[in-house]
Length: 98
Image (cartoon, one colour):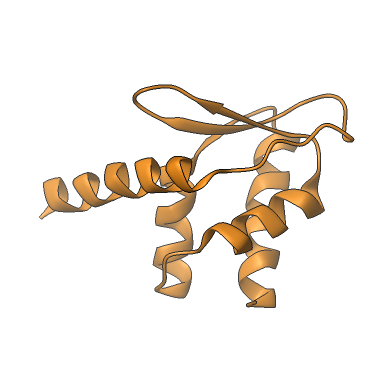
């Protein structure tokens, strides 16, 4: 696993949560892609989430959101379906920007 990638994900999540903000999974994918020129995989993402702790994954038909929960011991993890949905959203955003 790429330690600098995981460190960047942890930093992004912690900074968002400290500001009281949630982050869309597709935006996280875009940020990581822009910096590292790669798409993170499920294991890397969940490893970072485990290090942050207190992460809640909220999924609906349109989006997957990562947000903070008050109990650091409670942590949800992203599923393959969540990351696939986020990747499709990210792909569509790229196509529209061209």
